[in-house]
Structures are given as structure tokens and as C-alpha cells.
Image 1 (cartoon, helix red, strand yellow):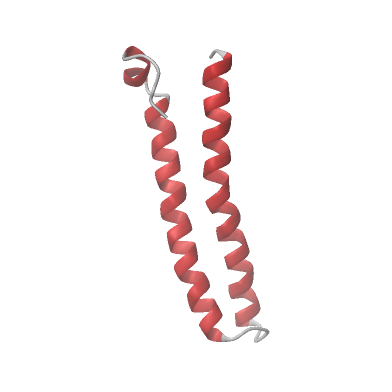
Image 2 (cartoon, rainbow, N blue to C red):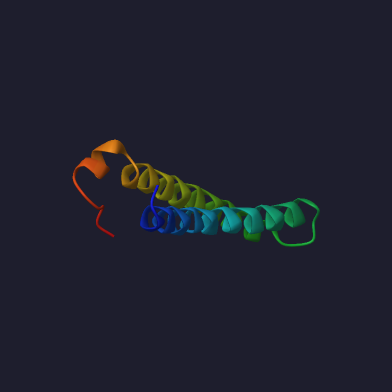
Length: 80
């Protein structure tokens, strides 16, 4: 793996971590709601954000696989 590929990999991993961090924060909010510290409605909103974050993370990981698949390397650099 050359430096350019490694830099693209680092960016892709960073992009995948963002939704994971959002999922973690929203999970903490749900925990607070279950403990009665925040309203139930906030927990429901947090669940919607967790679902969206999970989809975003899945999309980022699919993009990562596409960027580093042997087929992408045969056709030259992937477009960004």
C-alpha cells in the first residue's frame, strides 16, 4: 500500500468513526432516559439517530471496500 492509498484509508476510517461516535452518544442518552433522567421522547429521537448513524456507517464501510477492492485498483485511482 502506497502513501496515497494509506491516506485514503485513513480518511475512510475517520469517516466511518463519525457515525459510530454519534451512535455512542445517542446510546448514552437512551440510557439516561431509561434511568428517568431525560424524557422518553428524547430516547425515541435518539433511536432514530442511532438507526441513521448505523446506515451511515454501513455506507462508509461499503465505500471503503469499493475503494480498496482489486477491481478498483485495476481501473486506476478511485474517484473521490
